[in-house]
Every structure is written in C-alpha cells, then in structure tokens.
Length: 546
Image (cartoon, rainbow, N blue to C red; front, side, top):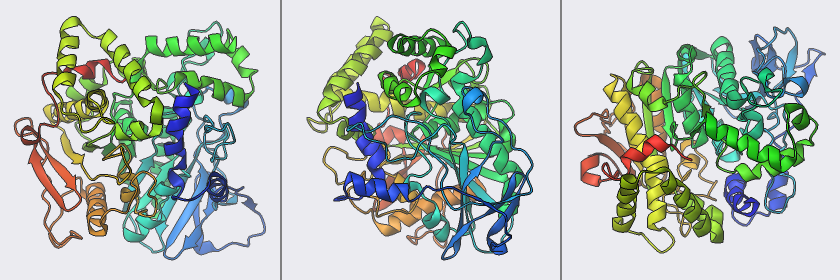
C-alpha cells in the first residue's frame, strides 16, 4: 500500500515543482516558505501593514499591491500534548504584535516514496491561516475562504499553486483566506469505542471542527482586513470540496458563510461509524496498541507512516452527531437551501490517479472495484457491470473501471447534490470542466483546474502546459462573480473574453450546466451530453466512496 500511496504523492506533493526541478530543489523552495513568526516587542514595524485582531496585531508583507498575512493562529492553544484528539480551543484575547510573514507548519502526514522528509515542514501544531488583501482602503469586500484538498490525508496551505498573491492582484476587490486543518489520524480517527476513548468524543471529525473554528475567526476578524463577514464564500477542491459540502450540514455553521464552491468534492468523501471503527481497529492491531494511552506513547512519525494502510479510507464520519447519517437526504430536506452553491467536476477525474499510481493503478482499481461490487445487491451489480461493458473506453490506460469510478466518486454525487439542493428550493450552479492536460494519461484529470483558479500558470505538473490566458481569466472572473453576487454569470462588458456568459441555474427538467472548454465556455443540457448514467450509476451514491 505504501508503494501505491507514494506514487500518488508524487503528484500531490510535487505539484509545487516545475518540470526539470529536482526533489531537493523543490524541498529547498518549499522550506523557504516556512519560518518563525516572532513577537514584535520594540515597536519597530510598518503600521500600514498591521491589522488588529482579537488574538493579536499581525504585521504582513507587501508584494507589489498585495499584502499577505501568513501563519496567523486561529486557536488559543495548538492541538498538542493533552489536546491531541481534542476539539480546537478558541482564541484568547491578546494585545501583543506579531509577525505574519511565514506559513505555519503543515499537518502531520505521510512521507514520499523515498521515505525522506516530506516537502512540507510538519507538526501537530498546525492550526494557522493566511490572508491576502490588496493594499487599499476598501471596506466590506467579499471574502473567499479556501480549504485545500488531499484526501483528508495530505496537503497544506503552503502549496505553491494555491498561493493567493496572484489571485488577489488580479481581483483586488476580494479578500482571500486559506485555512489549515488536522489531517489523517490526527483529524479523522474514531476513538470513543476504545477502553479509554470516552474522553475523545470528537476525534472522528476534528478536521471539520478545525475548519469551523477558522471560519469563526474569519467572521470575528476579517472586517479589520477590509472584508465583509456577512459575505463569505467557502471553496475547496477534492477533500476541500468535500469539506465545503459538509460544513453547511453542521449546526450553527451558516452564520459564517453564505456561499459554497465545491470543486470535485461532495459528501461522497465520508464514511460510516462502522467503517471508521474498522479502520481504527486495523491500525491499532498493526501498531500493537489497545488504548488511546498506548497511542499517545508512539513516535509521531511511526504513527503516521504506519497509518498508510488506511490510504483513501480516512474520511469525515457520518456520526449522527456532528454530521447527519445521510448528508444527501439532509440536503433534500432543505438543510442548506439558504446557501448558494456552485459545484462541478472534471471530465476525466480518474486520470489523476492513473498517472499517480503508475504501474500499480490497474491492481488498485481492480481491488477497489471488487470491494465496491461486494457492497451491491445482485440487481445493482448487474447494472454496474452493464455500464462497464457498454461504456466507451478512451484508451487502454483509461478503462471502463476508471469510467465507473468517475461516475461513483465524482459525477453521480455532483448531480445528486445539484438535484437535492434544487428540490429543496436552494440554488445550484453546476459545471463540467473538459480542458485537458498535455500529460499522457492525465486528460482532464482531478485537480487539473487548480493552477488556473489561483492564477498560477507556471505550475504545470498536473496540466503539463499553460491553459489559454483569456479562458483562465474568464473562469476566475466567474468564481469571483459568484462570490460577490451569488450568480457566476458575466456580461460581455465584465467578461475577459468579451462574450456574455449566462450561467443557468440547475433545474430538475433541463439539468443545465456550464461547460468549460478552453475556447468555448457555454451552457448545455445534461441530456444532450449524457454525462451521467442515471439508470446504471446514479444509485451508487448511496454507497459513498468506500
């Protein structure tokens, strides 16, 4: 399993590298982004770069017309020692002045294939956020809060393709925030069933609780940066997309945001309590541990490394307490009908995994398919196998199994979310991204749009090339327009390509969505494109990802 994950991590972790760049060069570049933000005690700092917050005054760094505030803690105490596997602690009022020059540590996560240190500087003390704003006196600007992806197991706000300076430089009327959260066995690990687990009732969903605490900090402090706390859009991709589709289900969350952009993520990235307990027991057996006290004695690196047996099974938990047992039903019942949604996926999501797993992909995909089929009834298996038999295979590298998992993990959940949000009287703007990477086998794979969204055309490890500049600006303008108004449509005057783009709301009859082709952004009806197999794969959403 480690070999499989390591191959995938080459794509996930090295996405900040350029072609021809060595691992050591990439690590040196990444390490330079970290540092210690010190307390300023001598009064020697630029007041124009300082922002007063509840937990301190933070001094940023200016790059041209954008000021970045990095590594701001959004908790009163970091989740280390006795606070490991405990709910995040709210901030403590503080009158001191601090540097906000460097990223905070990234969450603990598995290493790369050579078993060297990760590109990220890691630690359990990782609950920090970053803010980017234009150097102007604007007030009540819309706020966009980014939640990174990485299967709830890897990733971090330090990811260079998601650095916010370029985005805000192009869109100075937006405040951008990125937040960190606990990952893997520190953020999503069921413990309450263990003999001493009653003291850890939240361990299964701590990563989401961290995100809520970060959003609370934004709500209480962002006005001092020029942001509007009443106009916040949360957006994310992959596990980040899953996160932003789960956060509206959490009681009391709606006061912190009014809009959601979910990119290639949905409630499909969750697991049941039974599945979560099984994962915990499997790892406990491997580690030779029986209690939480035993786990607390382990070396952190060993603990994280051994947890790779749970790869792509560490998800948020549908525990019936923090998250509903059936998130889709909750949406259908109107739990988020007051939240505006924009959501979509790419055409060939599994291409990312074809490339990432390399020679191990066929073995992994066959195993995943076998496990999924075992969950189905005989009638359901017949339907799924019929889909695999009939679906057009793009190439020997992109098989019918890949197409099946495109449907199970991304496409069917996307449409179920759009359907349920619409049925409940809410709004959903739905999209389908079809621009292809130039990397063999990647096609329009998972995460292929990210460097475009954040205006980092130089980050080409997933795209293999730079996408058309006008297309990229138009896409970003739609993201920003949605954050501003709740409607991503553009007039010809506002659109970088000079064309009006009327983005239709998803409706139950025509099921219209926006198609992102590189030289033709246009709406279309799902019935014309046949993106989803409604009869043979839509029902699979009831089985989630695992």
